[in-house]
Amino acid sequence: MVRVLHITTVHPPFDTRIFHKEAKTLARAGYEVVLIAQHDGDEMVDGVKIVALPEPRNRFARIFGLTWRAFRLGLRERADVYHFHDPELLPIGALLKIFTRAKVIYDVHEDVPEQILTKQWVPAPLRRPLAVVFNAAEKLLAQAMDAVVVATEGIAEKFAQLKPIVIHNYPDLGMLLNPSTRHGEGKEKVLVYVGGISKIRGAVEMVQALEYLNPAWDIRLDLIGKFEPPELEQELHGLPGFRRVRFLGWMLPEKVYTHLANADVGLVCLHPEPRFMVAWPVKLFEYMAAGLPVVASNFPLWKEIVEGNRCGITVDPLDPKAIAQAIEYLLTHPEEARRMGENGRRAVEEKYNWEREKEKFLKLYAELLKP
Image 1 (tube, rainbow, N blue to C red):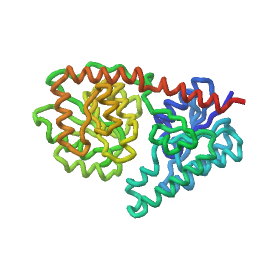
Image 2: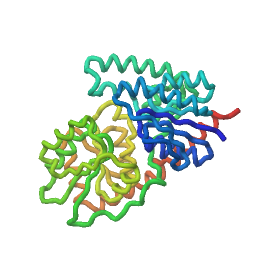
Image 3: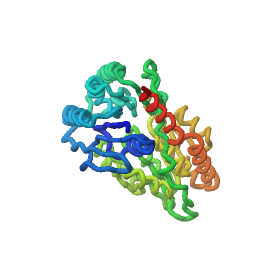
Image 4: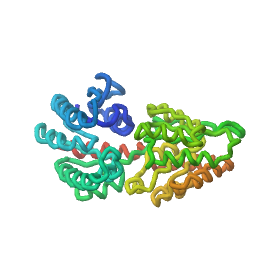
């Protein structure tokens, strides 16, 4: 049996892309799958053996300590394929290639050089030089890999010379619930946002938009995720609209999908940062899969998805009043909102789903492992 080892020092063990989509897909296809990740202890879950890493004390300990611990564990597992998910693991990916002669895959989830430009923990004068250096190092080390997998076409352009494989992070229909009956007239209306809760992801504008909605309406915004940075929670508490917010924290994917099935509108109002404008946001497709009409940023790519599939409204994400007007329209036109939700669900069932992507994923493995 072919042994596959997935490694992450950054993502949680039950990350949707790594565990629920890629690792479980391989296990179901007959591969022996091991996942090294931060966890409480070793265990077997859904056919995937999890080898636990301890939680690091800080970012420095993670990058320079946990990385090498993962390397030693990786050598011990003696895999036929090593598949890693964090850019900080690139050096050990190259070393695993040298020491084991196994196949090595680099899975690029995000455009990290673009991320660095907005990282609050990096001093502002150092962000651009650091992004340039990282970009060059990432491309250089990626050349040592047997394959580069990317989550979007935008990231694929950066690695064009390496002929990357685009594996979109679309929803796994097997994990989703069928859309339930929406709330009736006169009952509480639920808006929902899932993901990192930060200023560049529209946290402030979403809360401010609540101030423009009819104060007589029974309405709330559920925030599901983590505040980035944690101090942002206190800042949002100071906004008048926060009285209509319910913070639910981070949830397992299954619980998120259950929650979405009983919401009314999904929000994805990220700021016009270059990396967001070419991204294919997982939360957008999850809202669509749950049958929710969406209010999304009016980026050209996102307009093509939302307006092209007639599943929501796009707005200027920096304008809280525009966000509120879109929400108000959906809540006061329930039949049209219902049709939008149905259109979104249909689009996911036909185009934007993991069932289509996993065929490309399994084909990549089959080709890498040919004698």
